[in-house]
Length: 190
Image (tube, rainbow, N blue to C red):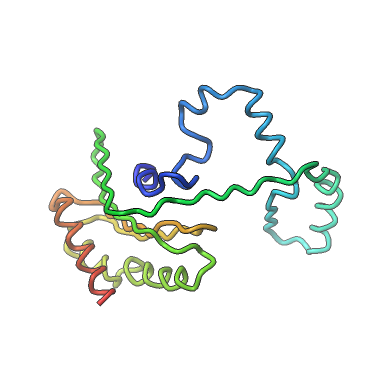
């Protein structure tokens, strides 16, 4: 959820909506938008992904003929390095809405996707929630305490989040589901 990510990251851009928060959008001027565009929107600051059954040679020819005509940035594109302050304790977020869906989530700071540790966490996430015989499926779904449970591991350049989220049934509670999730996690780390 957005609230969890915003609580997890106080300085880094990961804690902000991609397009900005509603007040940011409402108060931005055309001049500021143009200035941002002029700094960052250049082919040497972009990633192009081509998917489909097209020969590489044809794809590269098409890219050169179209995008190759766009000039590089006239100035060096600034590299933003935002250092996230050390988190010195647990942060808790509660969002109450008038809805029948009841969710509980827990996120942990996780290494970036360029690291060996990220790959290990990816395997752990699969062990916890992928398939009918996964640990959290057995502990929550089979016992009717949750109707769904999943793990998400951010695929990020900088350190991100490892998140576990459960959709709680009326037969259970936040406290009960969270206790089970934490017990299962503790079994992995012992």
